[in-house]
Length: 89
Image (cartoon, rainbow, N blue to C red; front, side, top):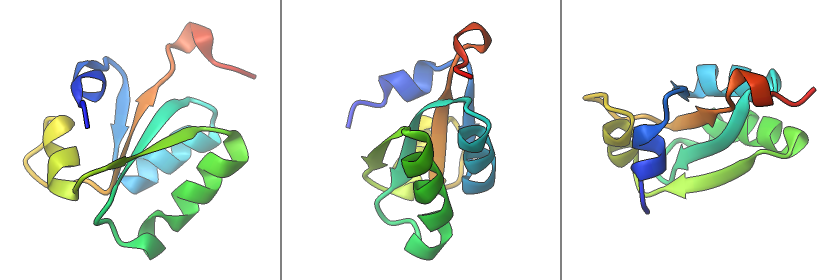
């Protein structure tokens, strides 16, 4: 998976809770979920993405996703956020 888009994103969230909130508020443009993330943990996020029509990409691992986000620990989920002026109502 090419992580340049996530690495270079100026606005992003990291973690299931923050990413779910961003999706629910209509701020998420693209969501990444780690392949090895606990499915019961990410299920509410995946449902929110389905309801909001947000594309979900599967990252190869939590370690990879954390590294792509610039943190030293694994991450179950992350999102690239829309620019404030492109937020859809």
